Length: 305
Ligand code: G1P
Image: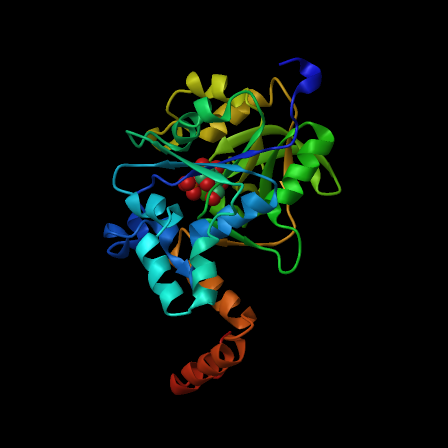
């Protein structure tokens, strides 16, 4: 392809979903953590909706051999559709038919060994090809009520600048060892060029408190770098380490997205997201508020602080 024809708008989104989800055992013994719901939608659906909104029409799921539930979820459910149709339950029928819009295709790639996030992304190389693409970690649920989703914000910025984009947010210094942490040049509006990135540094050596959140728009050059990335933090092939190589070759920007991020890879994040979505739900908010008040009253809680 000639350089002039090179695409700058992302079309492909990669969802690494091969993790074991041990934090949510015993539920995750049979239910992949990406299938845990916030109210009635699994986490993976929120991430997929965000990618589709950003303009992606090819969704690549990096799974493992135990995670049939994710593929089943995006497959057609003939029997269920027939039953709902016969029962005249058209609203529910729409819900299960529209997990993916008709122009969007889902591709499943098995990651044979759990070698880390960087390795999972590398598994998508043959499908992504030589085009910029997105990575979404469904654990990170980003809520921007009524506004543009985080990935679309980033894809628009990437298209305008030609730079790779990494979503970031400030975290308390004692939490740096849970995240990729970036060092940046000064920010203009929501973007700042990244000058360094390190995976899970201890607070005393972290270059900043600006943490990577699970949304990335990446140049395809990342694949060459991933191929030669050695195991890093936790003995895993880290996406962060390949990004550290990328930013020596091309501009990579940190992007402070608009929205609230819930870390649904933790119990607290999942509870927080559930409460927030319930309180904001068009049919459930009143009753959710009442139930919460009742629960607090019953427990004799007067002042939470
Ligand atoms: C991954 C990334 C890390 C990033 C985090 C965001 O870590 O490796 O850089 O900050 O996601 O959720 P994990 O949470 O998979 O350990």
